[in-house]
Length: 344
Image (cartoon, rainbow, N blue to C red; front, side, top):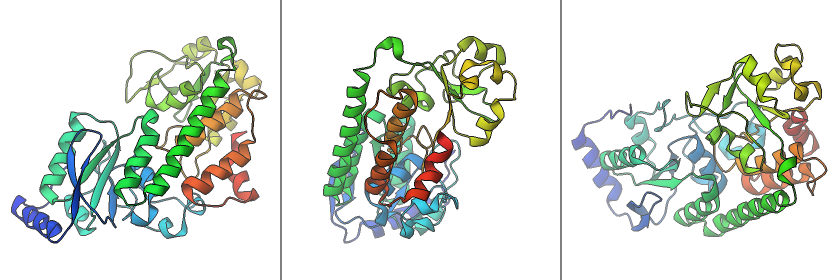
């Protein structure tokens, strides 16, 4: 539950202070809310991890902090000016940790959220905006909406040209994926299991956000059934063997190393054939952590891993180009090795 730590009268005074002398324009967000946004936005707070990644990609100079501070291994893959920004916590999700008092102390000109659009998030945005006077934009985080989200935020933050460049590249990546898949018969699409948790026996059900990228590149997610927690389910050993995936994707390099000796994994043909791949995660995950624009490059990585010999281009070059454009960081050979080496 999100809580307010200051009284309404105090918040009202702060709202008046924020509005005084400000020049604003109406922006209609993805929820259909008309929000008065300052013409000159210099400080932005991202309400959750997906929004934090989106903001970093579009206008890192406006970030007031991170929802989770970058870890040591992630920092070299980020712009120097952002590496040591403070960890502020988040407003959204089950792990919301930011107090209204701390939010106000950061004096953001704008709050953005990027993700699901529903009544819960509308209510939160309206409540925070009313209590603080800080405009709060909701941006549709559906993966297909990524180009539109990049354009919208670029326009709002006064970096329209960058937003357009990023959006066009997102559209190019999605079109290239579709062109590749059009050449691959359905019979050649592999069954792919996403191994999560310390034992790998947790996975995302078909249609969940966790496996969205796997399914987006035409692979078959064999896991179906009731969603226990955000689309994740426990998969017993017998069920795993019955699923008989052609390949396994994991987010944990240590887990992959243990599968060859940990029952029931050695019984899977995918494990015996070495078709277990670790999804890269620097500075952000390639598959689902967070579910934001970072997943675009995950499509390229998955295509190269799951359809070897059927995909044009060089993966290392594609990853380097993506990081150069979206994260504004130049990766040398050793950095690419660290990023991609364990994913083979």
